[in-house]
Length: 315
Image (cartoon, rainbow, N blue to C red; front, side, top):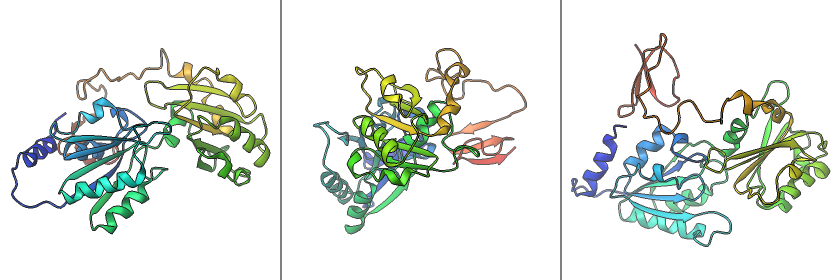
């Protein structure tokens, strides 16, 4: 991919500008995992940064981190339960402020989307208190990606008119009664609390044991796995030897829409255009005439909205 932003970042790092630069932090959603699931804007910002401060889940992919300039410093802050390498949130806040004081442009890579359980507010407040600019850059949350990886949409006109997303990190703090009239219940960070979540939905929310349920581990990642069942049976469908973290639990009638998806997607489940295919190397047949240019962010052709976020001029 052509990356003029990377070249400009390297020029700055080499002292190409004598103007004192004020630091700024971009709070970037890195998606559920892998370079295939980040936005074009995320890549542009990553290629133009001085420092990458990245989480563990969804933001430590080697190919993704390689998109940053070779001169950019990489700081792994963990943010994963039980990982001794994880930094505390106050320490991360202090680090971001310190980097801004040094005039650095920081790509703060967060797994998923900054809008969902990412501690974004703490970092926003720390930067604002110290007079530094920041920008929030959307990413794909695992709450949205996991259902698709299991073959069903999170909403449906007939059986999924609303959904509720909740952290299951501390199930004792969940008001399960609030899920009673919700069509689709989504729980993140549920690997260690599956039993409590299932019991809470059954007793606290009055969900029937026959309600379809799906567990997706490491959505879009190398260890992705999908288990299907019902609220009463899903736990027994997962071998006790299986590691569940990170996982998303979805309970609701929409889960049944994914039955048969493993066969529908064909073969071993790999996408037709996999990671071994260079962008732009595949000819598109038919009446589409697209000219994609990541460097300028333009796409010329006859398909409106080909990629969300790219400028599109009709050819």
